[in-house]
Length: 113
Image (cartoon, rainbow, N blue to C red):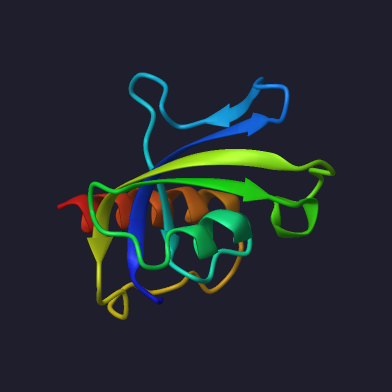
């Protein structure tokens, strides 16, 4: 918990249809804090205890899914990178969209070196 992780994921409906995926060519992994991801609560909790290079499959009820998803879904997670000490990363002061894009770019560069 608390480590920054880079994870590729693919979300499926129970009928097998892909809803969202970062496995696409040239797609960046999702970078979240393990155990604390308000945008992706199921993935944030799902990566806790995983090791780099690990794969995990989740069956997720609507209450643990992203906002607006009202059905049970399955997710495949591949954990690519773990950074144990996220403390040096500063959070933005205001939710300005241009500032947020710069922050995300900074996080990706800092996280992946």
